[in-house]
Image 1 (cartoon, rainbow, N blue to C red):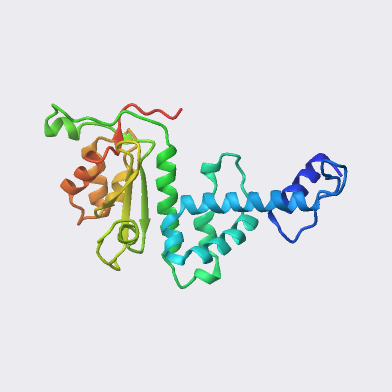
Image 2 (tube, one colour):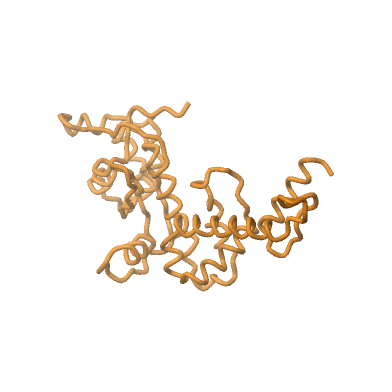
Length: 250
């Protein structure tokens, strides 16, 4: 058996409680490592489950703790970690939920997972200087060519994911509606914040690549979504630390 094959087999056994102990493993006394490996395997599963609970607290609340733990066990075997950085764990969770039959009656779950994943990605994103419009005229602001800050993400859903998120994270939040919602995630300080984005927000964001002025990006968004409110769009992006002028990802 090659080292790569052994490593792959070890990883599979580590995540599958029904798998036998990989050959060649022994304890401190030279005996079989059965119980020690089982303990190690259990610790890994518990750690990954806890990390998933931390990363998707609203999903956990929506389905219940016991069900979430059981679902996490299925997920970690179906989609084992690909990256040693724990904060990246769960990147495939939204896609997993979309194809997991036991939650098919909760069709908004995959998008809720995308929202929670976006909040985590925003938290770990690179820093950038927030666009400042202090001292600029309206014409000066509209002539700027900003880009989305690294911590800025846009998540669109056919479900009221912003309402559902608020309902499950804030006391006294109103009952969620049924309309489709788009969420703008920004990081004005240390912690990301989700904002409900007005109509046209997705199209506006897609044109903020540093090549078009704000005026041109607004015009492009209006061409696709004529009912878009330009004032509301500008307020949403300029008032939430969503934009920057100095970011270069090359």
